[in-house]
Length: 101
Image 1 (tube, rainbow, N blue to C red):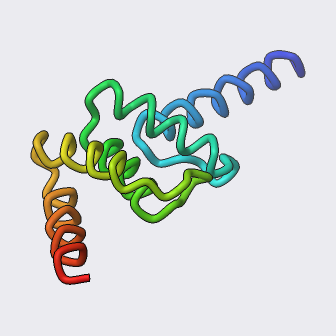
Image 2: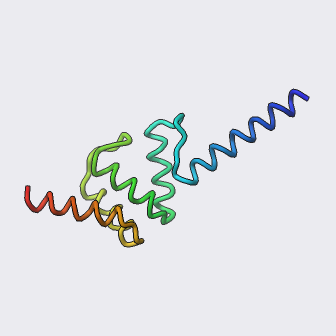
Image 3: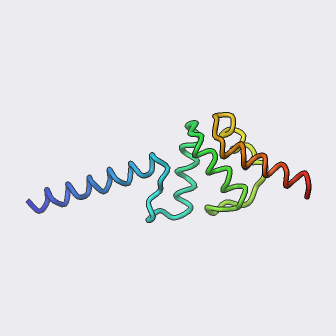
């Protein structure tokens, strides 16, 4: 009886964590490095939101990544081309700041 209870709790926790990861809503127990890997996995699979998040992370040097404008531009462009309005807006802002800096 107790074993079945623990098994059901384990599978419920596993299902919750899997659902969080696939919806790009990392659980609070995930560290930034794990978030980066999840975004990378989904970005490589063509998820526009993950591409946007990865682009922002490179643009701002977040999630344990070094700031890299070329890689940020690559991911933001891919996301924008997939129709992500936030990525389009971020690219316009980045280009305008670079043009006037």
